Length: 197
Image (cartoon, rainbow, N blue to C red):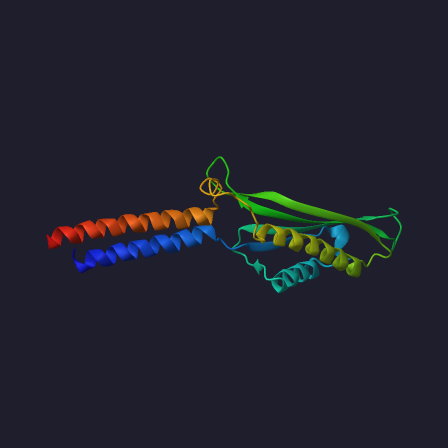
C-alpha cells in the first residue's frame, strides 16, 4: 500500500474522531437580553440589569456571547400601586426565561422557551434599583442551579444486557469509532498480506 494512501486513511480516522467529539460536546453559549418597559425605566436602568446578569453568569463559568445557542431574557414590568399618585410605590413583576435552540419540522433550529421563573414584589419608592438587583440575583441563582442539574453527570445503574440500547451519545460515538478503526485495520491487514504473498 502506498504511503500516501496510508496517511489519507489515518487522516480520515482522525477527522472522524474530532468531528465526533465536536458533535457530542457543543458548548453552552448564552446571549442576554432585557425587556424593561418605560414604566420601569425610572426605577432601574436596563443597562444595570444587563451588566449584573452578564457579570454573574460569567463569574459562574457560563459563556456569554452574541454567537449563542441559548438566550436568557430578563423581563421587568412595573405598575404604580396607586395609579395617578406622584412618587408612589411600584408593584414589580420580574421574570428570567431561557430559550434554547431546538429542531423544528422545517429542519431549521428555532429558539424555544425551556425554563422560566418569576418573582413579584412591591418597592417602597419609585426608585427600585436595590430590590430589582436582589430579585435578579435570586432568579439567577435558580437558573444556575437548574443549569448545574442539567450538566451534572447522571449516575445510572445498567446491566450488561441493557448497555447497547441505553448508551449515551458519547458512548455510541466511541463504539462506532472503534468499530470503524477495526474495519480499517482489517482492510490494511488484507492489503499488506496480499503484497507479501
